[in-house]
Image 1: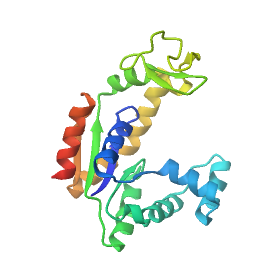
Image 2: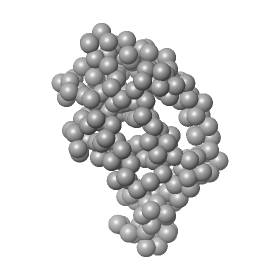
Image 3: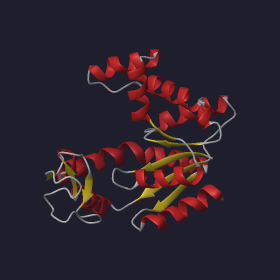
Amino acid sequence: MNIVLLGAPGAGKGTQAEKMIEAWGLPHISTGDILRKAVADGTPLGIQAKQFMDAGELVPDVVVIGLVKSRLDEPDAEKGFILDGFPRTDGQAEALDHELGAADRAIDAAISIDVDRDVIVRRLTSRRTCRSCGKIYSLIADPPADPNVCDACGGELYQRDDDTEATVRNRLAVYDRSTAPLVEYYRSKGVLHVIDGDRPVDEVFADVRRIVEG
């Protein structure tokens, strides 16, 4: 099963990806991880990507698509994969389909985890991170005994700059602008599945399982 996982920041994609990996052993392919590894390994595409990253510019689609294609050609992705963070636009989706088609493969399901934006704002603005060990808490779902102190190491808990309400709402607006055409792209292909993500994790995963296992 070749899967594209869609969802706004804070929708719960990471949690569902972990459960999918545990259930089916599919490799979880994140463009951020691919980029970092390619740069660290000094591959030709990694060197190209680093030049743009060092200049503070977006890595061009042609480079990102090349990196994703190389990753999808690795043996562990032969029986399927979970793509997270790619594609981000309908243009990238078209290029991905072209590359997969050349290898007689295709996206089987685009699973979009949908959560009301106000719920996401509450989720993300409730996050606190330990300055010492990096452990992340939710003041709503997983609160520490003391909202200012890490249960694990006693370090100070703080709110990251990108978890403030203004920043979160801006990130959501950017996501919605860029991803709306992508959702429609997969809907037109007949592979889009929209799941209500504002429910307990296991209920959301039950829907994911029905989609994947048919």
